[in-house]
Each structure stands twice: as C-alpha cells, then as structure tokens.
Image (cartoon, rainbow, N blue to C red; front, side, top):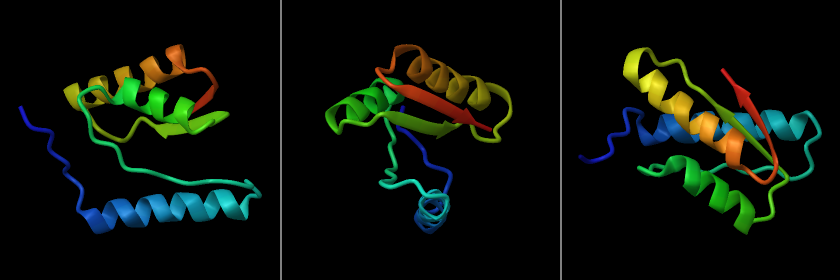
Length: 91
C-alpha cells in the first residue's frame, strides 16, 4: 500500500530545522537533515549516507506504539547493523 505520512509538512520542517539548529549550537561543524519516506528506509538511509560521505548517522526511534514502533525499530536496527559509519539512535 501507499506510504502515509501522519505529520504535516510544516511539523516535519519545524522538527528537522530545530534539530539542525541544536546540533549547530552544540558545535557540530556540518549538519543537515532530510525527510525520507520509503519502503526500504534502512537501505535508503545507508545509501544516502555513503553517497554523501557521512561519518555519523543520528536517527530517532520515535514515540510510536504497537506495530509502528516495531517497524521503525527494525529500520533503526538495520541502519545500526549495516551502516559503514557510527550510528546514534535516540528515543
């Protein structure tokens, strides 16, 4: 079925912009954020990071319950297990 994003675009932008601002304020020299919606999210994140020379991936598990939490947890697990670089998973 189709991918459904339950967040409004302005919410996603606000959250990502806030995270980027906090990282810059903490002294991270280069930081950026993207929104990714894909059935193969783990592979897409890893490929994007490799193509852009990332040395660290930071991702959240979200605050979802039930099956959605399990699915998102599996993406984080895949990225952590298969990535070429350090992965930090925040909840």
